[in-house]
Image (cartoon, rainbow, N blue to C red; front, side):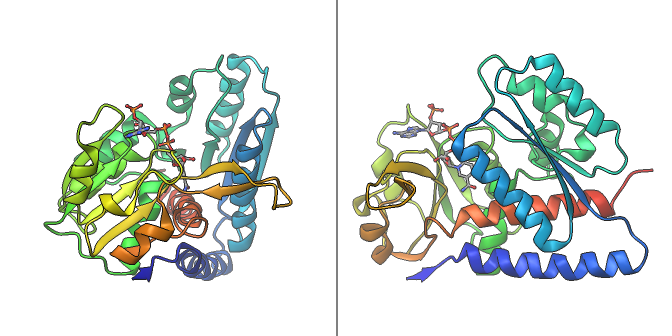
Length: 292
Ligand code: NDP
């Protein structure tokens, strides 16, 4: 069994980006700039946004973090996004999800200009991705592809099972793995909460992407010997032994599953850092491929 070490690979992505940014600035280029918007005081969201801002600093990007109150009217949020849309200094805009219930995620995502949609959630980005046209890829699935690429995981002709069909992870992951590309060319089964015989389906998988948000869901009796297992799950579970009062758990029962795998991601240190690396790559692309 070999670990798919997201911490290591994201560092190498960041090192290479930092070198490119340095070159770009030396040649008179503009500093890549990510604008992040956080609405409300969800603890996990605060942590994720803080990591993204810190990663921007590490590679020499500029970042702007706009923290807004949870009871903010939707129209005000849309107005703030519009201001970033119009600002030529801003290359990428991300609005941290989830949003408070009174704000429509769809409206927010559709308000972001597609050229600055570095999270890749805009319907146009999604459509282009599905068609295999150049577009921003959603950060988490894109990060997983980068990880697979780094470890040269064989995907062609393999059966990939994706558990979870959210718009930000499972569904785009299933589309990307089915594309005629590398990593891709898989036969994909997309599972969700209504899937019958899920353990039997998982047992047929060469590659399993677990993205359902149910800690320890994937057990060893659902995994074929030699499978590649990618654990997207991040759930905070109470843990009195930790200073923070919680531990992070993935969707895979790592202890029992790992011995059966050829490759597996740890949690933390797997998909999480790769999501941030992918976001940085999208922002870099946006900055350096501006439409005039
Ligand atoms: P969502 O809650 O939006 O979607 C969960 C999906 O899992 C749904 O499609 C749901 O099915 C399916 N599901 C839930 N329970 C089961 C079950 N028992 N059997 C089969 N399918 C099930 O979650 P997200 O996609 O946003 O996130 C998934 C996990 O990944 C979370 O832990 C999240 O924190 C984590 N995450 C991690 C990221 C990272 O960078 N590492 C980034 C984004 C998310 P249905 O559609 O039928 O309801």
